[in-house]
Length: 406
Image (cartoon, rainbow, N blue to C red; front, side, top):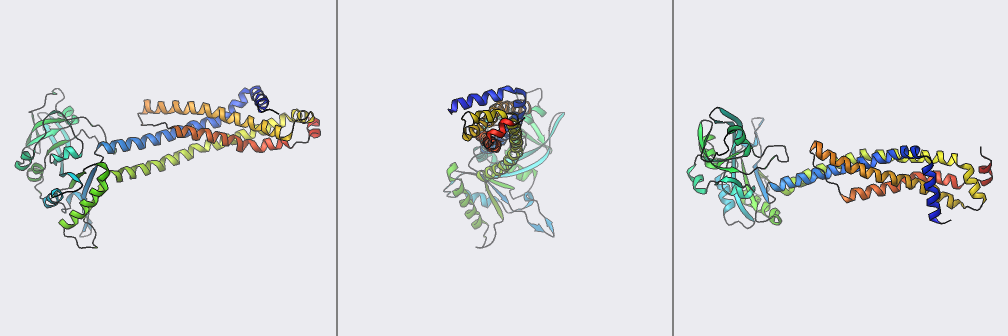
């Protein structure tokens, strides 16, 4: 029998019980919609993490001291004194893969302007920090190496600082703010960056020369971190190896001993967060995929009912010459049509649900063509897998017994 005739017969059989067919499709619809939505949320999160980390500086390298244990107490990384000026000078001396180097210190406290105050942190850096972190100015000028040498009491402020200290005055260049009773002159306003991957407000920041924080606020000789940028993104790993080799020499570490510092690249951060996001996406997709299995069981159940209801019809068709394979294909086509139709509706629902998640919850999403393709393939396989046994049962019916069936 021609496949077109079988398709027409299958479609008429499905159309006779529209409500039952739709209820059978429901499991497939929910499953496909859930799978597409979960994958979109996972992929969107991964893409968002990658873009945010890249925005921090795709070729950035962070050097941190390793926390140690003294008197049974684990020391905080910020208080470990294994990074200092000689390390910065060593990294700047004849670098092969290093483009910029900036030491880093931070101190938390209240910043005040008249009757307004705000709890924040002031960060001591050098002009290279703006290159490393891709910081740009909305207004004003950055501080210079001359300001660093003199420990000048100047600063650059983020949008959050302005919003909380100068709610009625946006012209803040040249104004003074106080941090721990020390006056700082605002010479520049940083462009808005928003929240980073960890949910921290990147605009809640005050940047000032490293020596100002080092001498006037913290009174220390060491650095909490050192930021480095590679000459380009492709050279990041080579730059990280170069940093490790230079610092081991600077710290006079014997061969075979562990480093007293850690070197982390953005690629490592992206890899770590992406792998975590991928695991969560797989987990959510598997949970959503259970709906597809339930939908498949529903198809099998309804096909069994259909075979029982149409036993006489099957016997009559066999009696006038229909082969077992024709009956098998007909019922398989019915199962596949139900599954594929449910898949199409599920894709529409899944895309709609994804858009609603982005619109109402503001969660980053990304619908990929692979998720839609996989959903259709799964629907086809589900139709064949769960429809085969009822179809096989129908094709093996004895025509005489089928005609006698009441």
